[in-house]
Image (cartoon, rainbow, N blue to C red):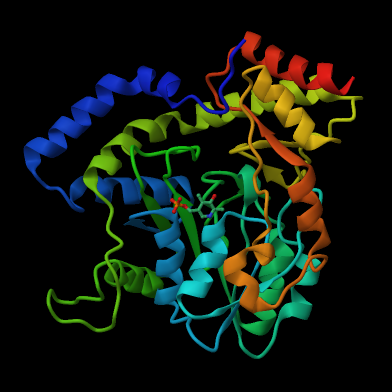
Length: 366
Ligand SMILES: *Cc1c(COP(=O)(O)O)cnc(C)c1O
């Protein structure tokens, strides 16, 4: 049986008419940038995240970039984050001219290890970017503790964790700002690129709003150098159709995960560890297995989708060689890169599909 890693068509089928009607409304209005649909989405995503403000932006990457620029972080500054994340987290720090300072992960959750953050703080440190990887939030209390002791901003990279919780608090609501991505493969995916910053800080909100539009206030009078980080209403209408379904879709992902957990119990497959403090939205269901690359080849030969997030930790990327890191510096991240693989977890998976995935993994490792 063929099972793709993700099937966007299966979800689109269930909402197609509403999405097309929304797009048609936007086209009839010819409000092609910003406008009421973007504002409605900002309010609804902020509310869903227990935040006061939302700023629609052009991607998850630009959400992070906008936060760093709005907090005035640049050359001479240091920002602490994890090497086990999507490129954008570290890429944005480098792009504003600041120095990425990496801290290894907790091997159980794959999120930044809070205990190792304090030793990485210097007089130049300005911010910490915890990444809520695969749908589960990082251990925020100790991170917020270090941040308040050293007066650092916390920017949550919640690109994979919209509406997930830590001790009952929503992703994006704990730091100075939270960043979401609407990349189509995220739990709330648009029909192109998009993203959002949420915050409870009104002054920061105002800067984020100006920064996404070249720092102009009023039009053609520029207080500072921003960029074009604007979100299109075409994305907003598609996301407004999807948002009411998000909790059901996350619940379906959790049911799928519970099924896999049960099937893999007692085997050599190491299933995801979810902290009792967290409710995850399973953007990915990542297992660790022995002979990982052979397992992947076996799944691919049987038309079962799988992927490695992430095969190369960021300290080993060519573009960051200037940081002077070497192999062995972040052993938990490196080991995770060697052992991890993601299985199909999307909400529309059928029982037969899940069974086929679990059988295929277990038959090979038995
Ligand atoms: C997807 C992702 C981003 C970037 O989002 P884009 O919308 O693709 O720019 C940033 N950080 C993490 C952890 C992500 O998964």
